Image (cartoon, rainbow, N blue to C red; front, side):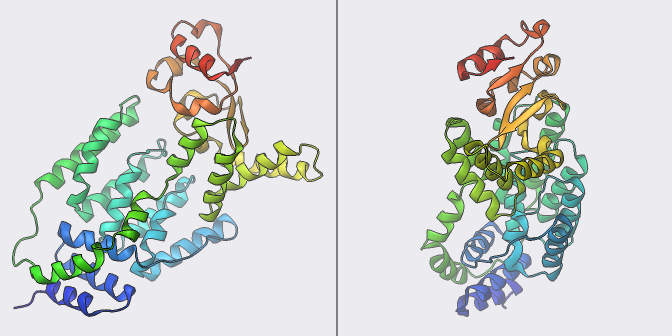
Amino acid sequence: MSTPADLALARAVAATEPRAVLLAVLEAWQAYPSVAIAELVIAASARVATTRELAGPLAAKQAQWLEVCAAGDPIDVPWLLEHAITSRKQETLERLRALAKRDPDPRTSAALIERCAKPELRSHPPVWTLIFSILRKTRDRRVLPRIGELHRQLQPVTEFDLEHRGRLLKLEEMLAASEQPPPPHPQRELLEQLSQRLLADSTAIAKAATAKTAEDFMAEVWAAPLDDGPREVFADWLLERGDPRGELITLQLARARDPEAPACAEMIKRERVLLVEHHRAWMGELEPVVSKNAYVFERGFLSRAEVPWRKLAATPALMTHPAWATVREYKLASEGEKLCDRWLDHMIALGAKRV
């Protein structure tokens, strides 16, 4: 007797359109959530491109994202996930709540577990509560190896770090204890046919797997902080995704090249608006150790900073973070020199000046 997963896989084998293949293998995974079928979903999804842009003011972008999510088209899932996390807490919560209402999807778990590698929303515990709720609901055992890697990569520094690691451990325990789907298993012949069709030509999958992330672009900027080239490439990548930081980088690069341009006053005004709203998020992991009232962004990145020495001394892991490479001037109270001497040596090596 054919199972629901078999019937869906058979439709995928017979389908000629990439969209139909994706819908069928996703239905098969929802009927039988195995690792093998999850990989087929990822491979089929890589062959179905959706092109959308978030346009207009913030409220319009939010309405657009929520409308696409509510429509429930599985093809839109990668796009939804790409834009699910924003620098605004309330927007992000609304988007995650909308995602949580959708049927489980292995693409969702794959994307959200990567968010755990870069916990930029440290001050928003409800966001992480939702992320881990979705990960538990999906019960995707494929993320177990990634959780193990995160344990090794994430060094607990703050209370948030400890809580974050604790959540990862609980998720790991739950997934490790969960059993593989019980028999009857899907027909091996159907799985083999689809694997040969979707996985033999790995071009799309390799492209997706090696696609750059924001962290990759930032690493290139940090590696060559005096070069505008990596910043321009990053700005273009951000603008394609509707990220306002792309606008900041573009504006500041243009103003740096021609500070006497007639439009500079308007540029500065727009930069201030962007920074008022996003500067803490754009400081990234350095945010906890940079004064909230004494900072400057230039060419899209933190360039001057006053550093509260007690906070820096309490977070030694941040003293040699690569993000300091863009900081050209810094201020540190003299009484903090002894406890922050390793950081001072690092800044001197970077060529930064003390003011």
